Image 1 (cartoon, helix red, strand yellow):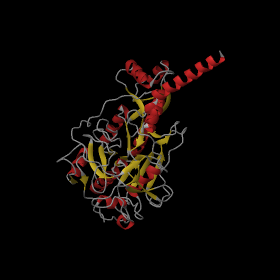
Image 2 (spheres, rainbow, N blue to C red; image 1 turned 180 degrees about the horizontal axis):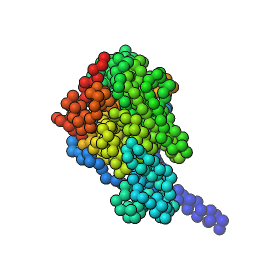
Image 3 (cartoon, rainbow, N blue to C red; image 1 turned 90 degrees about the vertical axis):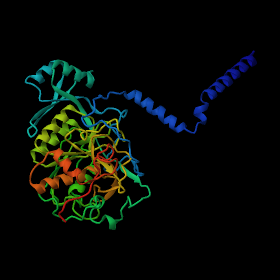
Image 4 (cartoon, rainbow, N blue to C red; image 1 turned 90 degrees about the horizontal axis):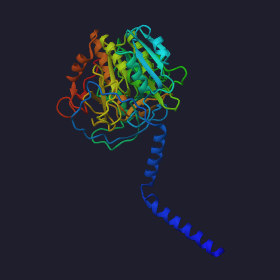
Length: 467
């Protein structure tokens, strides 16, 4: 009898083992097992996090029809070091706004008290005097999602301007390797870089140390290492608008952009307008999940400060979603003749424009390599206006050194410098459409004839005449 039960147990064990083997045959012997395992892990993680993104429509300049041009052969990876680049705000990447928060612009009298009766709490109030706006940062009722809270506000206060406190990321990737060049090197030698990679890449003549004198430039970015040799002694004013309850983000990206714009000439990281004045606003901070992000509330305060300081242009090498409150602020800044220039975004997509670049009055800049091939991760769309160098850019890095980086972030400062120079030279303000037309007349067409969705009007050739 004992032998009988032993035989039965052995039979069951063998049968179960055989079933498990057959059921998992593909997983055991597939060469893609690592990929499948990664997918299963990602799916499991995704199901735990859930999707709470607010879907908002595209902007005025986002309809596209042109085919994509061949991409650059360079390979990029997520930024490390002082850059602090996190996962992109692309579909499926997770939350793209501050959890439990909304922003409200120009509320009617008594709004805060009425909203409190609905269990909304006012977290912060910003009186944006230069923009002529009042903005509230509000906590949504307990247990209510941000989309549901926005629906509540819209229903109870018809016509009020309210939106999520959307997040922004940096329009940057740090380069890992480069393809073999066809015409001129992607990595210029120190001799070719001379005093400024930016001047070399833009095909401008070497500038004097006072080039750009009289120009007042602004930027919304990360913090800036003003002790870097490229910026030490330059006319740079820095101010941070991050949440004091969070850690201010690293200075890698902001240092690179600031040096490209006004850096002291030398060692390849010299700026395009070393004689200009730069006002730099940080909006980036470490999120509770460790990611580096800026948000709408910080950005609005930064823009208001820059407009109040009478800058002529604002460089925005950042990317995020469309936001009603930001759109209103952009219009106010434009009415004051402040030109906004923004990176076109690094999501490699045509169907999802990056903001603020896609707002109608903003000039959007995409990136090309030194052979004028489009950056392989660049966004496309009708909102793209110009294409400037942004692949394998030699940039200043915190601590005194430099490094190669890629992204539409590094293309935007070229147009910002040109715009600032033009306005300072003429000593009168212009609107973005007039400036855009002026620059388009000097652009080298890189794609389909005329303006296209990949390169916009193309590469603006002639730089400042202050050598």
